[in-house]
Amino acid sequence: MVDWTLVGILTLGMLGNSVQAVLAPFFPGEAESKGVSGEMVGAIFSAQPFTACFCAPIFGMVVGRLGRRRCVIFSSFVLSISAFVFATLPHYDK
Image (cartoon, one colour):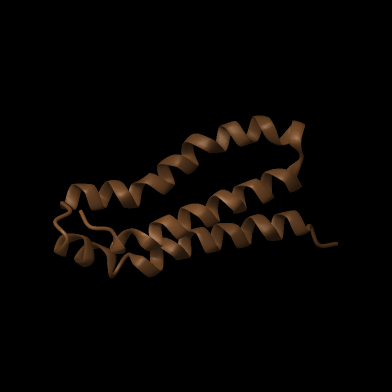
C-alpha cells in the first residue's frame, strides 16, 4: 500500500531543494553585479535550511493535532511562496 502523504513529503523535499540547486550557479554572480556581498549571498542560501531546522520540531508537535495532510498542504504553500520570492531576488535593485 502506498502512503501518499510520504510521497508528498518526499516530493516537496525534492522540489524545495531543487529551487536552490537551480539558482545556485547563477545567483551569486547576479547578486555580486548588484552590489550584494558574499556574506549576504551565504545568508540568503542558508535561510531556508535554517528555517527548516527551526520549524521541524514545531511541526512535529503540531502534526498530531492538525493531521499530516494539513501540515503537508501548509508546508507546500509556504514552500511555494518562498520559492517564488527566492526566484525573484535577482530582479530587485540593491
